[in-house]
Length: 365
Image (cartoon, rainbow, N blue to C red; front, side):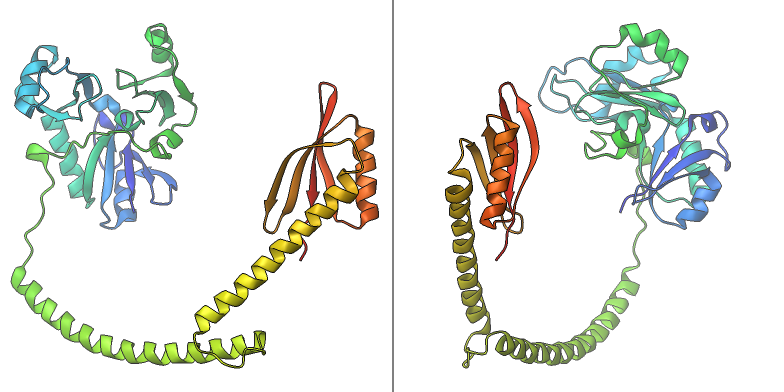
């Protein structure tokens, strides 16, 4: 069960415990609260932290010359001339190679990122992954979505941006078409399309540390648990045996009540399946007979054409009809009532010089 914590861009200027954020629970319930209140609500539960795009930079490499995946250092040297800060001060996070052989890279100041993680840890928030909101948009198409007071651009676009309303108006002429614009970005960030190939920033020197487990304590605990589990298994085994015998006796009683002619029970499951199959075949024959009666006594006496026939258990027969006029359909309905069949006509519409309608014959045993 995943829980997400989105940081708002306003708090990035001066990070503190009162930084406003949006907490998204596993059931997709959203709560806007401070970072300190989020820590209390989480109570140690691990969370996926999502940074605002305003804290990061994003770019793509040129087409990589070899099929072999490059290491982080090779990527860093390839994009060094496009960075606004010294390479040593930056934390680079590399995403998967795209269809054109390029690698996406998220760029974040190391000192700033370390301070943020320290603040989160100080508040008692356990972080499992760190992503960026604009990078979470699905890759199935280009997206522009409204989220936390600004527009996020990403997905299949060659950019990852967060812009204000005025900023979007300024860059709109340079954006490609088409773009899926959403006034509510939550569905794109957490919908069925998923979060695309969002990059996790927790790697390298910021890799999540796993505490060493006290193996001696673990062995003692395992021995105790095994002893308790063995005793519990024996008790449960006796209990389930008693329950199984009781259910078996009840099943035989109900079977004899439903099928009194079955005086001998050898294999209860096989006998029940055979009887149910006979009942099903009989019911199927009955439904086909009713369809034949409908076609012979009701439809056959008219000039109505049958375009399609469909049968569903519980719903009955559905016939798509084409008639010359609404009057013919009315005559058809009257013949159906006279025949005693439970028919209904609906969805009538005129298409060119013909009338289409749906005739239903209710399913009755």
